[in-house]
Length: 232
Image 1 (cartoon, rainbow, N blue to C red):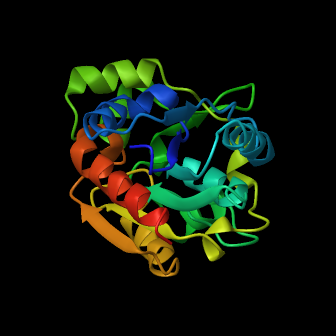
Image 2 (image 1 turned 30 degrees about the horizontal axis):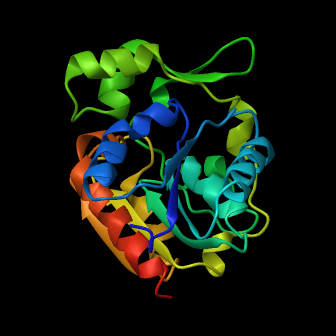
């Protein structure tokens, strides 16, 4: 698929680039050959956006950015690069200027808000024993246990970092809402997606981990965005 952009996948809190594994498999089966996945430090929005910008700059030709969860805030901050042709939000934050993931979360607290636990070093965890019911209740419990044990915790302060120049005001966007999300309230996802003037918004009956539980549907949206973005 030489006529489609490089797809750059950006993970969120409490996971790493491997959270995209099933979506990557689906995209490869669809014929996509240029796919990258950023591994974020999760130390601040500035750090994570800079890491993403460096990945974008390494690509030849157009880039489609895809963000899950907090990764949506990252692509919003980092996506105003000349070779970025579109933004895809997967159960993700899409903040406006001056907004933060934490501030948006407070508008409608998610079901699993009480299952977050800060540690003495400033990192914020999903309680591992509650990860499955909080993050990925539509995956097998054993898989949720592994994801909970291997989770990548962010510095809690990152929740308060605000967007300066939202890329979705300039770039075409697509959005997937998870109707059973316990980490980002579906009401918040609906509000954010409604103001994007998105090319397409879909709703999946899925947990926050739709990129794993609904990988074919998520990949299909990314594939559609990849094809449409180069026509814009």
